[in-house]
Amino acid sequence: MAAEGPVTRRRFVAGISLAGLGAVAGCTTNPNLGNANGGTGDCAPSGTLSGGIDIAGSSTVFPLAKAISVAFQEQHSEVEISLSSTGTGGGFENFFCKGDTDFNNASRQILDAERNRCSGNGIEPLELRVATDAITVIVNNDADWVECMTVEELRQIWKPNGAKQWSDVRQEWPDEPINLFGAADTSGTFDYFTKSIVGEEGKQRNDYQATEKDNTIVQGVSGDRYAMGYLGFAYYRSNQEAVKAIAIDNGDSCVEPAIETAKTGAYQPLSRPLFTYVSKPALEKPQVAEFARFFVEQSTNEEIVTEQVGYVPNTDDRMNEQLGALEQAIENVQQ
Figure 1 (cartoon, rainbow, N blue to C red):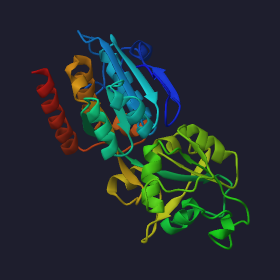
Figure 2: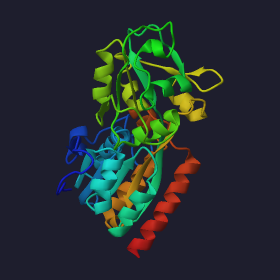
Figure 3: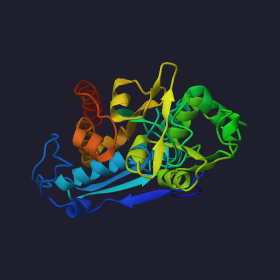
């Protein structure tokens, strides 16, 4: 995958080559990864698959895609996988819709403008839902005045020209500035959060630290008693000793972000689906088609999706629905 020309919406934030990670992980029993059927045991032979797979897109889906890629390479060690975290919108605009990547991970659905851009370059995206996330609002561990906030209070903070001081939200809160960290505007997390909290997608105050690096958000909030941020649940889950999650009151009661509350739909309005999009023309390549199958099959694997990464897995019914659409697309391009 080559990033040719200027990156118009954002720079490339992070990238890793997963070539050889199957060998690093080792073809031995690994209870955290499992095999293609969701079980555990010795790796299957690599078979005849080879070639490359290029993946970009959402930083939220990145850790899941990485875990799936490592598990896939345990069985197909001759396949090289390049995986980059570019943000949902950045991935669509700068790579996927140009035909430079086979997959684009996304923390929101593709926009009509993005689909049209892809179509203009002969790229037809196939949407595959791979998990469910709970966007998590975080504060500093020493922010002892706040445990739960209403959606309206969050809107007061994050809307354009929003509250400057904590005391602007509740009089009894500190008369100190709210220092904010959040997703960049190329991020699907930004789009979903602004639509759910502010009320209009893409509308948010601009005086905050914007980044595609979720760990930067954790670091910023953990180092500032008066800070607040938001990010995907998996990043909070892996850093829950460093920051504190805020429960959200959507009108009934305070509900904490968690696997179970996202699964039941109780955590609203910040539970959301996660996707990967595969280019239908790229499915002509055997390694791409097989990886797409593997990703969908593993989307029900609790050991990977929940225990290792921190998201809600697909149900069997949803997985079979996604797999049916994928098999039809593969048949259409490989016939």
